[in-house]
Length: 377
Length: 72
Image 1 (tube, rainbow over the protein chains, first blue to last red):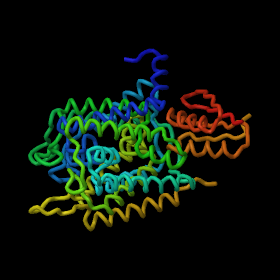
Image 2 (cartoon, helix red, strand yellow; image 1 turned 180 degrees about the vertical axis):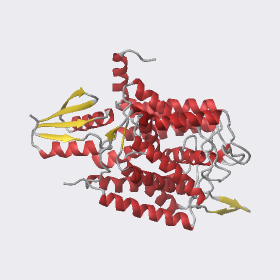
Image 3 (cartoon, rainbow over the protein chains, first blue to last red; image 1 turned 90 degrees about the vertical axis):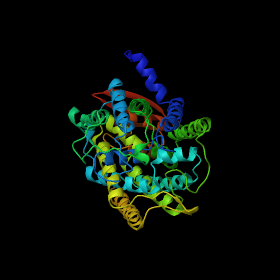
Image 4 (cartoon, chains in turn purple, green; image 1 turned 30 degrees about the vertical axis):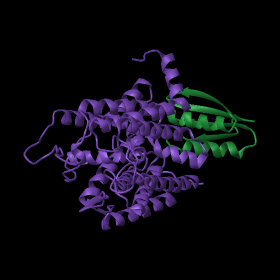
């Protein structure tokens, strides 16, 4: 327990330093493959988009039976960030900056990420696990974030947020606490009703609840302190040649690669990688859409959870948008299908017809928003 | 009195940094005052200003931060 103001000040300075962000990147890079080792899906120790999709499934907002689990990591991210923000005097309830635009950005971010099959964190973890398709996703992310940076340079803004009441800042953390109670007690609301738990597929693969929750809380705490953000890492490098956040991201990849090697989880290739597809164009375009949406909303999906924990209601709206978008991705068959081996032959996956239309529509919406939501001169 | 004042309160990352950077680059020397309300914006603007070779003084009042950036 940190009680002394001087110690807190030193901790704040450390986490704002280059060494601080690298340490946080290393920690996430070690914890994520360990979560996989403890039961989470392959190359998916942590994936914010996938886990929010699983949460949507557990609540019955979509009914894809293989991706249903109220992921304690996500709950931990929000509550860990809340604890850190409260402890260090950074809990600032705020909101009211273009909520419906942020909601739609969240929807399209989830659709884009799930066409690729992963958020930026999972793209990095897939790379560190040897999945070459991650390179296409990361290239798409770079392209999308760069386009967002261009809009920002031209004066893009969603407008100012305003201070809000403490209660409004605590709503999403309270919902997460409720979810924790529901999943810990495996509550069923009746025959055939929520909560849903996958019996097979990625949703059935998970570490023990306490392990997942502890990892989520720890990462939430550290990431709130250090402002770890994968989208910000690319944006700052492109926009202002600031490589602070990028050094944390690089540390994550190095640590995850080393941990995967040590745990025997590294397997290099492109075809039929775990919960992934090798449809290069749509890996690229899916993540380009996600990257653009993250850039326009001011944070990667992980960062949005940490901001929500700090009391940022606009980030909480984005999170809700992602959960709904993840449900849409399955209800409307927009998500990418993994590669499959059929009778010894590779069947390349990827998003289907409607998924491709949704990605193009999302890119059009984000571009329109980027061009029109501008600061008055 | 500052040569330029940037009110970046309530703006999402990285807008405070961009606005402050534009203001710093618009003057040959002097001071730019930047108002922000989150510690993230405070730290990001400070890092950018120091990167540009400026000195930064931070005052906190009422949960907000006033950054006085001196150039030249």
